Image (tube, rainbow, N blue to C red):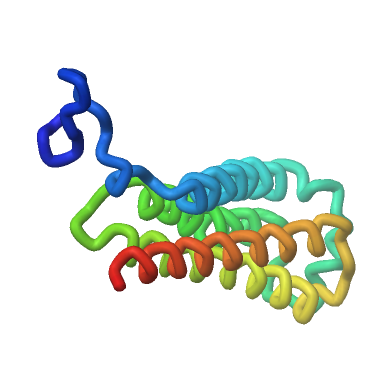
Length: 154
């Protein structure tokens, strides 16, 4: 441990509590990692099998198959969630300000993904409310982290 992040207590180095990652940051990273991995798997399943979803669901879209929707799932959900994991866990001089902001964006992105699905496809899929709920959890964790970060500064 570096001296900047540790304190000597009875001859032993003890981690400085002010340098610990808040539980909300770790929880946010865990949720984002779960969503990111599921977006990769879900995108792959869309590309490979279409999840068994009828192609008629694509009637109101520019797509004739599920390949591009799978790629869009990777790019618009998976990639931002992986970025969120990094923003929540990698220490930088501007962390946690970036971490909680990215958390807000990833949560809002999940909500937007579901709203666009409902508006464009006009079909209900049982995972839509689950994913929207996870987006709300991400937003709540990010807001909690923001509150914790700003209360420590002031």
